[in-house]
Length: 85
Image (tube, rainbow, N blue to C red):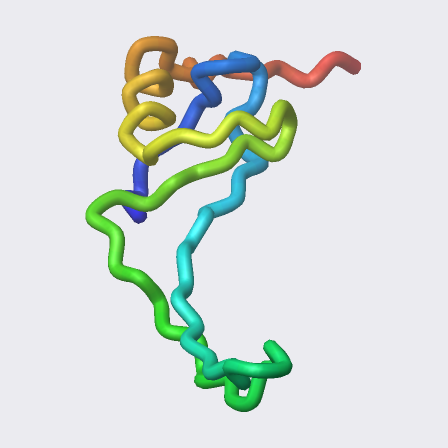
């Protein structure tokens, strides 16, 4: 994952709450007659070129680049704050 800001291209309100979606493959053996599972192997991560990101506000899921590009199109500006006494 890249160290760049995200902005959800769907709800256009979330910049901080996301999940990364990963895929795993888990092989197993079944009994041919009963259908019972006889062996489970440990899951293996499936390598992906680009991570899939999910917005935790609206549940939109897309590739990481979509979230990065949206943040670049609509950057968050740092504004100075002055305390009110």
